[in-house]
Amino acid sequence: MTSISTKPARHDAASLPANDNQPDSRADLSFLDLLNSDEEVAEIARRAERLGHIVLVVMALCFIGAPALYLASLYP
Image 1 (cartoon, one colour):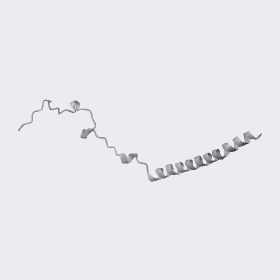
Image 2 (cartoon, rainbow, N blue to C red):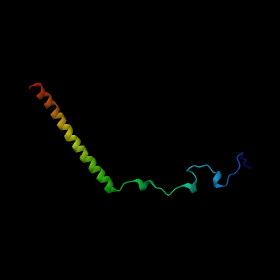
Image 3 (tube, rainbow, N blue to C red):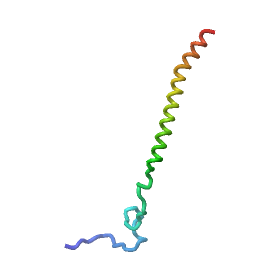
Image 4 (cartoon, helix red, strand yellow):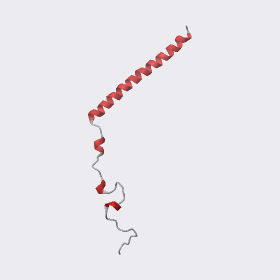
């Protein structure tokens, strides 16, 4: 049995649809190139940990300092 198509056969590159599924249009890209090295990840983790410690200290000072300022303002 012969298959009959209503669409004409397109063989030249200009008539092909512009999509990323064509094997000749794939770029030599890899998602592994986007990943950071272990040293960069460790540096980001160190900076995040330091920032977390700083935020924790500032929050503790605010929790202690704000009520102290409020109580000090009540008794002149």
